[in-house]
Amino acid sequence: MTGAQALLKALQEVGCDYLFGLPGTTVVPILDVLPDFPKCKYILTLQEAVAVAMADGYTKATGRIGVVNLYNSVGTFNALVGIYNAYRDNTPIVVTAGDKDSRLLGREGFCVLQGLTDLVRPVTKWSWTVSDSSQIVRDFYRAVKIATSPPCGPVYLAIPENFLIGEYTQEFPKARGLTSVHSVIVPSKRIIEEVAIVLTSALRPVLVAGSEVATYDAYSEMIELAEICGAPVFHEPGLSTTSNAFPQDHPHYLGFYNYENAFIKEADVIFFVGGKVFLEFNYPYVPEIPDTAKVIHLHPNSDELAKLYPTDYPLLGHIKESLKELLIMIKKVSGYSGRKHKDHYFSYLFQDQRRPYPLEPMNDENCVSSESLVKEMANIFDPNTIIVDEGILSSFSLLSYYRFTKPRTYYHTCGGGLGWGIPVALGISLAKPENKVVAFVGDGSALFTIQALWTAAHYNIPVLIIVCHNKSYKAVYAALRERREKALKNSSYVGCTINNPPVDFVSLAKGFGVEAVSVYTDKEIRKALEHAVGLKKPYLVEVHVS
Image (cartoon, rainbow, N blue to C red):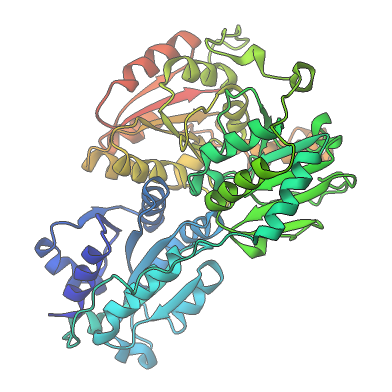
């Protein structure tokens, strides 16, 4: 077989359902033989960042490896922001690139870049160029192994065109034994016993659920830990959140971590279960952890432990299995039968935000508030609806007024590279066709990868895209106002407005083959969302928000 055939056979061996890509001439050997491998469906995108983000979403939703295929150097340049987001989110994807003929490297040929793998090395776990046709399969298997071994992350594999054409002469190896490692690590029993004693003897313990609770399917263990310790639970800060890690309708849940919260200020023990401690947006001038609290942090990545703050118990381990061992030990602690929380200890329970939410009157007849939009979403959407959040400033309303009660129904990137939301939602929808998937995005974010709408239409991926259209880069606008200098005094906000002419998302969507509607009032929100929920095709709702 050829190198291209060997690669596609290897993809089938690892259970790859989709190959996400935007082709160029160097990947023609792969495209030519793809029909012979029907188990792996090719998903065409119109921009490389879309391909990477779709693979990212597919992997987040399934836990299976997502594979991307790009065109050499220029395709890699366009894909970098998507690779960076996957790197910050620890998403295991394999990005393959059809590189130019290896014999052109020293001849400065068309689109040839010396050191292509060096370009992506800062944002990948491993980057490599295949050295021969016979090495393609083993290098691909190695890429899968590295990507999926904790801490997970993206890898990059460049395959020169002449090796894809060349003959694969080796005996074809099976994936088993070459693509995975046994990586279930738990802290020692001695340390687990110490932590159990610290938690059970604490007067004011606080738990912080990180996104890894969802990644490692430890929802039930986290709930049991909260209940047996009688402790309030905060979610890790929204900036670093990649998935919901605790049911927000649980009586112990008190919102997102905020060091100004009285429970956190008065805590004598804070246990971070997964999560980044912390992902900082600005330099903090006051500590985000009280000096009086003992700190416990469990994480599968040693780089995250004791990174910014002294940690009394830095625990390296698999989240689910480590919590199982800890729960067993807590129950063994002499004389401990579980703390029952007192009503006054949980006084702040978001009682005013239970469904159905009353809609507030609008001041502007030509737009709605993001709060009104989110409250209608909460009233209409089923709890199993999956929401991919790239609303930027509108995200504050989403996280304040929408309750995520089911595991893995909220996704967000801590990478910050815009254009992530719509294609990630498409990838998740391919993985979870039984769930309604919603992309909740700002207008500025949507425009980065608006080409993803064509892919949604072409493959009839039934994602609902909600575009919060405020005609501006509102985060930049807010930052200029916060400076309280020339921009605020002169009311001159350079580079913040996406208007004059205004962007018409309905026309854009229809141009890519996606039906769409524009919404200006509260009544129109409900009508548009109720119509969209039942559709089995992609649909875009442009909401003009204040």
